[in-house]
Image (cartoon, rainbow, N blue to C red; front, side):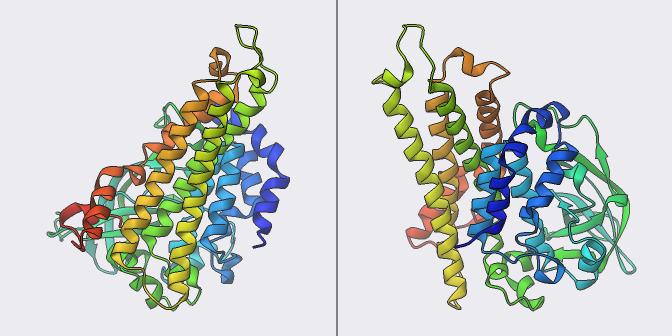
Length: 394
């Protein structure tokens, strides 16, 4: 299928790649890197057409994120994270959509979704407080999605817990400078944010249960198949696509570096019968990861497009495929980096930056395999849905 946004990324490849070292040094995307990303339109791929978006097939979005991340891990990560938020904003109240995109359809929305705040009810809405980590690309965003729990009039969390996604403008939260000091994905600027006694109108709050069970896009009257693909299939997609793209970037950097490298033994790498098979095996594993992720999203999309809902069992298997794709790609990265030689680890060699970025991407909560694999196995044994927290994000 045609993907003009992917073509724009390819056309800007050299410029995006050149910003990688700058992004890492700044601890956030440079203004130039952010503008390059805006110009490609990748963040608007899942945005409603009404506000200048493409309502693209999620697989096209994933392919474009992969290509971007292969050029620079941090830029690709921000594309994958920030590019997911228009998908949910399409389900939000029309009043907040107009507030966010009415004047500028290129307005970016940050997150995180972790429920680290409490919504205390007041007339017309809520008073919101909390402290969140990992707000990727937040310096270049003017609005934010934050996860929180509904509370009572005293600010105590309701029981059983009920979570929501809360939408706030930049004026209602503080970005904590110097809160992003990490080993990889340094250029994402995934800083802490703090909210203190912000008033949130009720129309800027989305019950997460409605997003999770698919009621939100139905109630919003959305017709595009894209918005009816389950949130738990789409949200992990941009993150894992970034990791696989970073793995492709490692492979490309490794191949370029090894092409003329002579080892300490005097043997050229291209003549080494032990190094070459490892490269090919790693390349095959990374490609398998890519193919599995894309086939997975195509299957989910086609199910929805046929008029049927994706079952819990199908979602669990899909999450297993998505998680394993990331792990497979990063294991392959280690195989080639371990053969890059000591000079591959010099700070002026981009191999080591991509390698660090890949491992940082792997520790995102969406890639934790334990509960996902457990739940998937139980559903295939006929226990559907499995008990307790294993159903989280499936």
